[in-house]
Image (cartoon, rainbow, N blue to C red):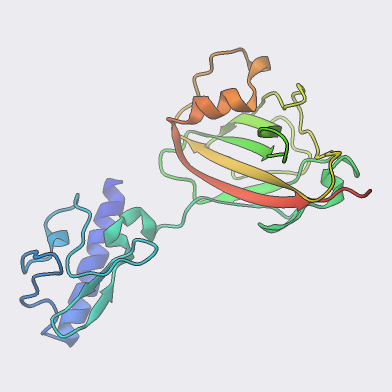
Length: 236
């Protein structure tokens, strides 16, 4: 985080220098929307959540406004981690919001899909992966529970095996359980990848780690997460 803040500050100084070079009236005596002093706090204080002379956008980015109305957009000042790409999860099985092909369900071969990810948060020790669905008439169900994935890993191949530790699905098996819903209509299946700062401390043996157990165990060590949602409708 210290390195990121230093990068952010260097970029701010460069951009501010560019603006003031072209317009010497930018920020001369501006006191800010909330009465801050003429010297923008971000030049001296690395820890504040800056709001000097600004309007907040929906993404919590910050606009610094000069005395002549010049607007300088600095998203990394509001929260400098926003300047970096978030953890992302993709699959060649489908795009987020798309349809899960039948080969990954019990109507096909029941293969587990290939997944890949990028932009893991700094300090990621390992990953956990869960595939869930929420039935209309019941609580969350887990089709796939996988943890202990090394932090250097960036993908799982189709029908992956030997990477990470399999937990227990809602059907009581330690495998990828392909969607096989008996109910009518489309069902939404969510793959969620969790970047963890440390291995989870589990209250049960490996053969008893359910999705619920793992979810509770990683709640305090999750650095970031990314999800991929795919739906599937079984034929009648």
